[in-house]
Image 1 (cartoon, rainbow, N blue to C red):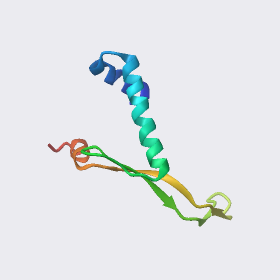
Image 2: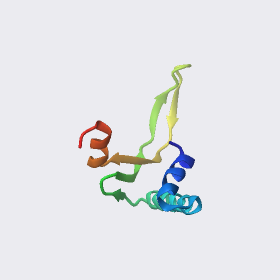
Image 3: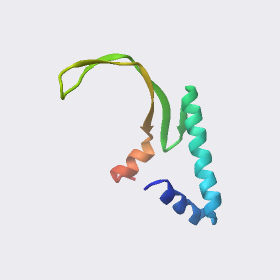
Image 4: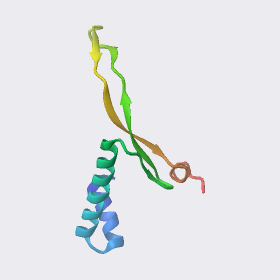
Length: 92
């Protein structure tokens, strides 16, 4: 499911495609901005989003075998909640 399909699914419940698109955009913007600031966003039953820091490291190019330095970076991290995991596993 992509963003357009998500908006379509939500618009059936809200009755308006425009309202659904604004709701999806608002939720995604709020999550992205909070995580970028370093805050943890936890949605009960769904999961949590947080910022994870990766340290600098030395890696190897598999094609050439040459070593390269990979700089430190921050990445988003998602951990699924128990209800979400159970739904995907087919448990109730």
